[in-house]
Image (cartoon, rainbow, N blue to C red; front, side, top):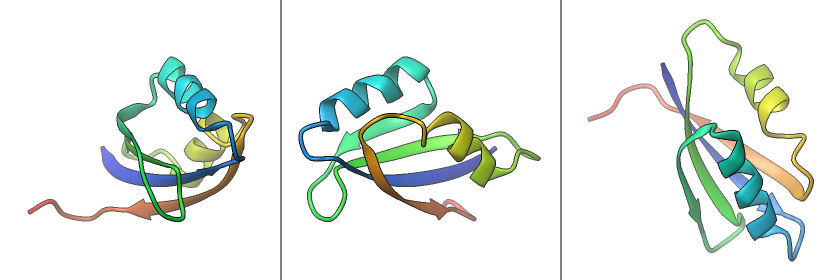
Length: 78
């Protein structure tokens, strides 16, 4: 499994709706509201051998209210 973090910027006023939709899809390991340039921080695990970009595109980016995302791939946990 590949651990991936996705920061999500939402259209103003839609953060809770976006978070609710993500929760309903059961994609995530953890989901946090954040301050700064992004509104949500999503931690998810993508199965080995699955194209991470396609997985995020197919399962996350069609949620209404998502304005922008920033994906960070991880390599090793210490």
